[in-house]
Length: 340
Length: 262
Image (cartoon, one colour):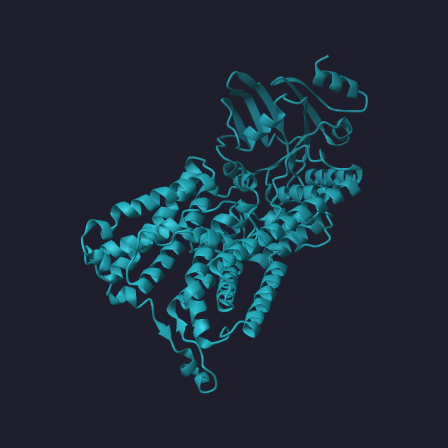
């Protein structure tokens, strides 16, 4: 797969940006800032990893922000209204998110909807559902009650790896949030699924040429539904991390995150034309966005300018993706012309 | 690899019964009668040319045989047994491979990945299908061996096919069908988008396919190719079979008039 040069370029860009801010942004290269980076963007990397699957199929999932809120609200209601123990709340919230993703896939496959349209619709549906099941609205006083179940709140744990390996004697070493390791685990699992298993190959085949995949006997429907289910599952994980951090959930949780996740995936080299990319790139892409946002903040650049810059980076990534596609087409055309 | 070729050694015996025959095939799309009671048959080691103008029903016929559409009536008989083919997967299972006109290749995958798309060599067997691990090195090796066998040369085996020329792509598509075809290979205008030299390469490949004992159904508009390669030619017009003969240089004019109906 032709992901390597792109991934290398991405890593290089990440390294350069990191170095730039380390040199020029005050307090960027500090342990506490690294903690901010890891805890503030691991869940975004998880969303981007999930989002890669629909994009690899030449689709998109606009509803993940709403799925984050849905899973968050399921966890909120179960814990605070029904007093369900945390070890049951976690799988229930994940199941709700995965189900929402599966529904997206089913709509796309069985009603033959454009992924953009289908998930735009479910974005509204899921967000509306969140408001209608919100325990904050249904039960008085719950909106100010924090979630205290250890199963959930312990997701927000930090590990002092520096002391564990003895590095803290030399430098101040950042503490690693659990969410960072969750992200690494998901990354390892989904990357190896994509590269080494038949399901992964099916994803690339369906994303590269849907009709050919069907003719090759690949179950394109099941593959598509599974991809959106994975995307929903990742949104569920991200939701739990957020709920653990906030010790509550809100109806607006996750608003706008779908766009950041899509940006991270595209910056990470997942082609919007499908079939090209991996989940490693999107994870890097998410942290690249994080480095840029944190760095600019430390440099004193205003929030609004930061948004403009984020948009510009996204445009650059999409432009680069287009360039690769066009160049490939042109090369094929030239080949044909020469031979004819 | 040996196992793949072993099935082809008992082959090409002139009087062999047809490996595939279609009897009384009809197909209707709304008010359009696409096929009206077609009979065709093809034997091992034989190339059957399927001719006809645009809209004559050639593509519909082969799409029904390869499981994309289904006949409204009529039967498909494979090695003497009536067989129902409901999907492309079932056609493959029955030993029928098809190379489509619009090149059903995956641009984002390498030749080996294209070859094995949908039927990768993987294991262990106790895992659910989707989670089985790909045996990529073995698939690469088999692809290389097979391409060598068919005398197809590609510049780089680990490049994605988007980087390759039209002829190379067509060669990959045709070669892919040979990996798995156990009985019949259907080629829908394999030289349509190719230049002279590339057409030559593909036509040689088609001859190799026959020599290895496959039954080949070749759809083409090119009379020269039919005369050169086909052992028999069937002509369709407006969904009906209007003729069947052995194409030679002398009856080329007759063939052409059958096709256009003049």
